[in-house]
Amino acid sequence: ATLYHWDLPAALQDAGGWAVRDTAGRFADYAEATARVLGDRVASWATLNEPWCAAHLGHQAGVHAPGVRDDAIAVAAAHHLLLAHGLGVEALRGAQAREVGIVINPAPVWPASDEADDQDAARLFDGVLNRWWLDAVVQGRYPSDVLEAFDAVADLSVIRDGDPTIIGAPLDWLGVNFYRPE
Image 1: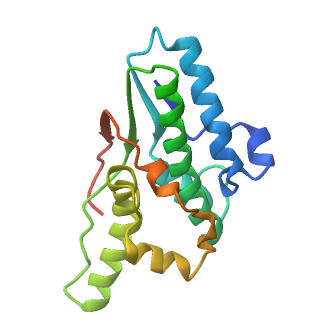
Image 2 (image 1 turned 135 degrees about the horizontal axis):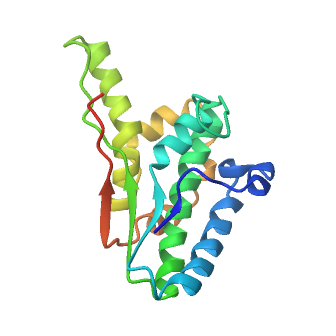
Image 3 (image 1 turned 120 degrees about the vertical axis):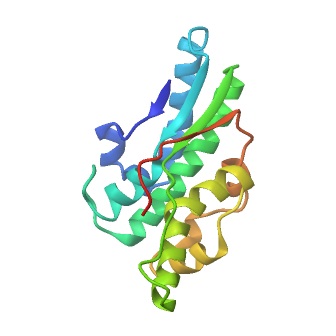
């Protein structure tokens, strides 16, 4: 069962959506309530499906809901989605959920050429598309080069002490939706 597949309730979006920390806590409440009601019938839980899409397609490119085009909001959303995942893992485990994981959509990133600018761009895109999510959930940390890039466009004070540990809570499985190289 997937708890979040880009379907944030309008009331939460009206209150700031993934740009605000409170949404992560509300997600944890939802995860716990859902697991308590359905836990005896669900063998495996996914906290989030493709959070990169929700963060960047929804809050940076504006092509998915909520249709926002703001780099700083996208970074806050990316962190709060991962925080929601970590808090959701805790809530599901507290409700005796059997298996817990997350589904991401990584892709190999290939530079357009051997030129240094293309190599640098590919490394950064790999960081945003892949390493931001994988390093956080598997290693409990964000990649330093991506943090540096995000610091140029966003307020990183949204990342509080202890958040990476919550986000990196042990998982039973990691789902991968693979579509194509980038």
